[in-house]
Amino acid sequence: MYMVKATFTFDDETMAALRKTAQRLAKPQSVIVREAIREFGARAGRLSEEERRQMLRSIDAFLSHPPDRSRAAVEQELRQVRLARRRRGRRTP
Image 1: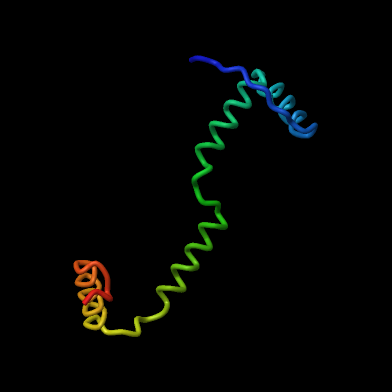
Image 2: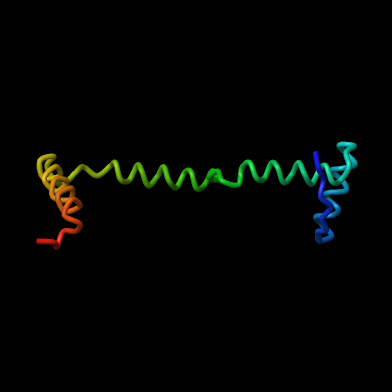
């Protein structure tokens, strides 16, 4: 694996945590930083537990309201939308 040398600036608290972790695990600090970045990157796109709960609450709230239109009315609107798309807009004569 090709390595690239980089320079970063850490605050005292972060540097102390890095040194302590590297010493405890008996690994070089650079390995600790690489593993931390890899782990952070793997979960950066995932929802946090609170975000997940909020989404589930939103879905539950949505599903708790019964539909206020009949299936036939919804299908009629969908037909109108599809027809409008074929005509390139609802306002096209």
